[in-house]
Length: 52
Image (cartoon, rainbow, N blue to C red; front, side):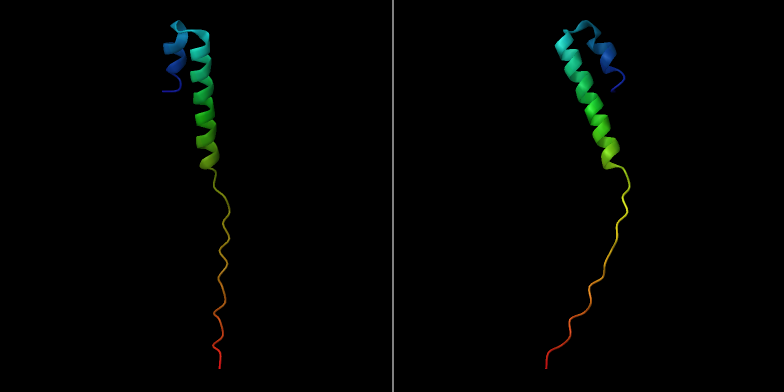
């Protein structure tokens, strides 16, 4: 859909097409950034010692 918007916006005013293009690029960037795998380290807690 992001590739179709510039074709649709060709006949619209420049500000609207600029807004839609920048918005689509930022949405693509956000999707790429949120799908980057990260290394997750799981630390197990030690059981508490019983008192008394």
